[in-house]
Amino acid sequence: MKEKMINLYSMMQAAMKSEKGQGMVEYALMLVFVAIVVTAVYSFTNGQGLQGGLNNAITNVVGKLNTAIK
Image 1: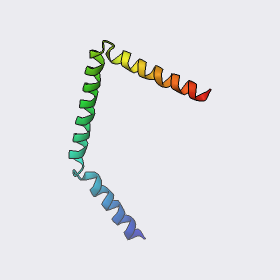
Image 2: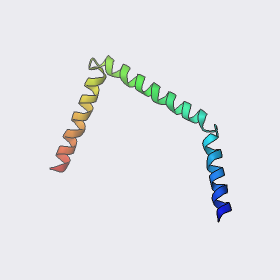
Image 3: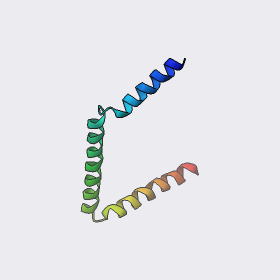
Image 4: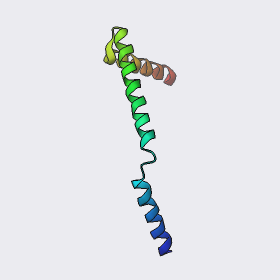
């Protein structure tokens, strides 16, 4: 049992030091950044800005939830 625990601990340490997933994480972060930029640009073209767009979205969601509850 002690050997299994030591092996498991060694495998976990090796996995934490591995850089295999680094490329995927960087790719995901770039996609998130691009999505934020596109959302901001789209919101500014409607004349509302990012804050106005978020406020409208939240207002719509709250309104639909209120009608669904009633």
